Image (cartoon, rainbow, N blue to C red; front, side, top):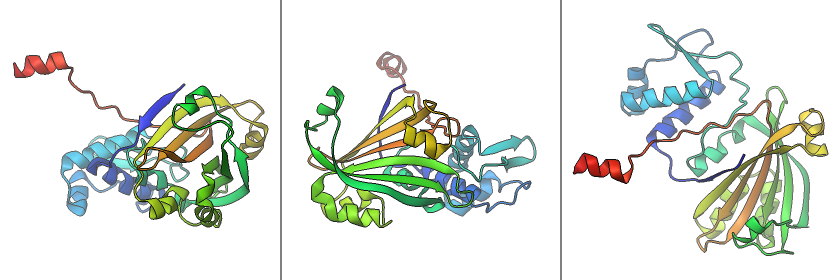
Length: 257
């Protein structure tokens, strides 16, 4: 499977979805009790009931909530251990799990990128050496493995990579402090067999499927400055994306004509 996305600005609906999701994961609402109603959420966050309703529907799709008609929305058991990711619509979404996970550096070294023809199209050159940091994330509460990633950055960002390796902000945020806002983040999703290191980390059999998400970060000069390749256990990870339908030009002509 291959999916390509560009990350844009975050909508009000996505902001409210993130806030409620984080409250669910932190168990702000006791299990077995109904969440506040749409009107209560709307008043609390200063948005419309329509926005709240859309956010709750998104959380139902992700498997965090269920509805009892005439009673309300409830948190599903087990959602305190996130085994999914939301649809990414802004750079803020990339920071979603950083506060709930433990961060461990496995290795940090200079490495020659292994490039495909597709990589060459985004401005990379064969034989280029990049700094490569391998990172493992696990749940702070259960120590369950969540992801194993390799973060690549150009050597010019050695100081920022050193700060990142010490557990400071995500690398792209450190680089943005130096270079200004990121122009665009390109995202690729693929299914592949687990490597021996990934099999050992996730405690799965060799060659079991994993989900790999690659993100390419572009600076204002449209040159890639960071590439992150993250592996997730396919058995405990879901990627959720919402597609909004748009009217075709023919339909629009019929409507306005």
